[in-house]
Amino acid sequence: MTSVVTAGGISVTIRGPVLDESETVLDRLVSDGVPGSLASRNAKLWGPDAAALAARRLGWLELPETSRSPADLPAGPAGEARDRGLDRVVLAGAGGAAVAAEAMYRTHFRDGAAPAELVVLDTTDPHEVSGVLAGDLHRTIVAVVGESAEADSLRRVFGRAFAEAGLDGAELAHRFVVVAEDGSALAEAAGEAGHRLVPAEPDVDGRYGALGARALVPAALAGVDVAALLDDASRLLAVLRQPYDNPALALGAVLASSALGTRDKLVIADHGSGLHGFAGWAEQLVGGALGKDGRGLLPVVVESVDAPGFELTADLRRVILGSRPDEPGAGREAGVTVAGPLGAQFLLWEYAVAVAARVLGVDPFDEPDTGQSAESTAALLRSEEGTAPTVVRRPPELVSGAVEVHAGAEDALRGAQTLTEALEVVLESVPEGGYLAVLAYLDRRGDAAAAGLRPLLAARAAKARRHPAPVTFGWGPRYLHTVGQYHKGGPRNGAFLQVTGAVTGDVPVPGRPYSLGELQLAQAFGDLRVVRSLGAPAFRLHLRDRAEGLAQLTEALA
Figure 1 (cartoon, rainbow, N blue to C red):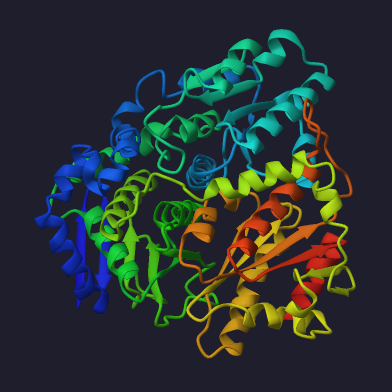
Figure 2 (cartoon, rainbow, N blue to C red; figure 1 turned 180 degrees about the vertical axis):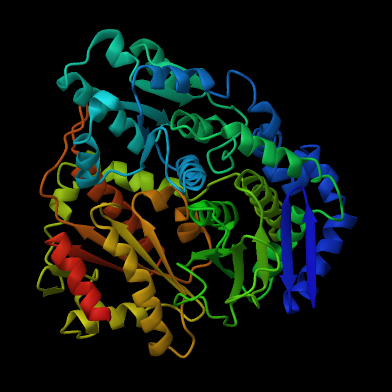
């Protein structure tokens, strides 16, 4: 059986048994009047306890239209920057908005010929930041988005770097465009420094803000045609009130029925959609909005429909991002195929996840568990004897060449004597029906080989276990703002493998008593403390030499 729901430029194709499962949920959503209520911004859809926050977080439903106003659509700053020869845009921020802006840029200029370069820095890794600082600062403008520790530290680091490059006064001030809510501490700091301020929507958060100022400003600065994105979203917006022929409602029913049933892992693979980087944005939305109160849907982004981990098992639901609903070839038998342009896809998934949250009985807009890691990080940075450099001196349970294995307790490695044996212990520690999250606090560019650990571990997991465990991958600290909520608030069936690396050239943070390297380690250790306190198996691999250590890990898993 196959059902194709097409409207507003989007097609959602549902095949096989998932159709029967989702139709029951869909009928319930229609009978409850959910499409009309959500389109009317009814804050009570997620229950009385969630109503107060939802009332302040439903602005995303109107962004395809409201983001067109001159205050929100930054044609002015973009034109001014290029007139001044500033064609290198650094996004300093974290969370869904940063991932969305990166997807916009990579998709819009997937064939090259971009008028400006966009560099997304949602990291505290000193190697990665140093690499960006080594670029041409005289062509660089920095978009500061949000008030995360990453954004604050990077704003300070680039301010000093610009000053050392000979910029001062108005020229230095104009090298920053700040996106923040009016009245916020960041907005006030921007005003005092003379930076250009673009107001962020007060009723939209970063997770649901793909079509808001937080994502559109840096994308527009880099030359993305954000008006076209909004046009595509507007076509879908027009059909979201419909109870039928509503692809967003259909996708929401699929997500909800999967999470309610046995298929609580959502494997997402791209198959020629042309939406580069979008799967990562969908991952942060699904994981962060639904993973709480012991419930949720684990997003598992894989490299392709042929990648290890895409195979259909009892607890996986597969979603293919395609170019058309009848896309032939590998993976066509998957449960769901979604096709359509990027702007509409953002709105489609935001709506679908909000609908699924209602069915699951969770608030899609709160993040009750993300603060634990931030508090743990802050405690490490405040303590004179508990700073990250002190904690890291704890002896490892195993050393193999350039790789240290830290398991938290000597018996946690179960007598493993080699790196391969230690990695087998990590895989065996995954609870039945659970997952393994690989979390790399490294340089996304210089240590890009770390991402290759996911398919290698997934392939080995498929051979080593009777029931293969899905393996996810995230860069730290990016994942803290994306799927970190699921790790702490979702079902307690995860195991965690952190990868940290030696710092050979640190970067001080002006006005702060720590460096980027110390902040990065505190973020890693802070999150490790939290997941261990929740009883989850958690291991850390520390690379004494990053390149050599990654090569060793690859060889051990081959």
